[in-house]
Length: 152
Image (tube, rainbow, N blue to C red; front, side):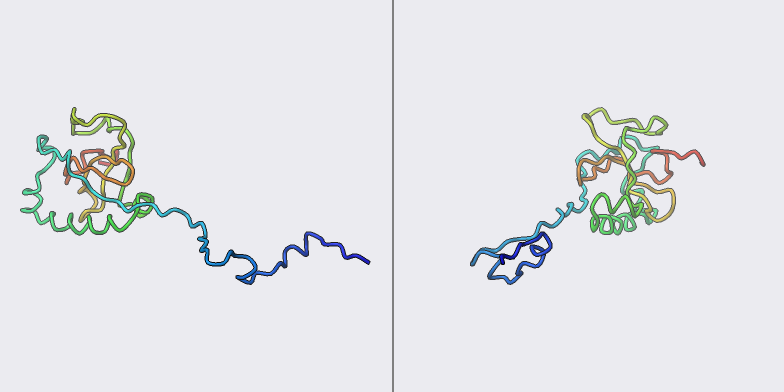
């Protein structure tokens, strides 16, 4: 009597390496692509709008610059999604209409504006835009006027 194989029998095929892999050929499992960590590019940093913004020198005098440097280290250990989930990065999209700043004319194309947050308190922010995993700082905003909230 011939035995009939069922789908159930196929589930128990041998998993010995010599029976399921080609000899001397390494096969990799597909692992979810890891997103790149955030980085910064200061090519569009703008000090022409001070006030309402500030310069690095002003932040240094106020003791904020070292806090900002530590925040860079913190933020760069995460990818964009993780930084947003941890509320370190807030992406708004278009340049905010209620901003006390003006969009610099040399920044063109489709960019997403946002801020690096939690820089030594509730208000201080580093405002700029993000493309992919690169954040382009444009303004230092210690008074939270780049995208003022309705509470203030």
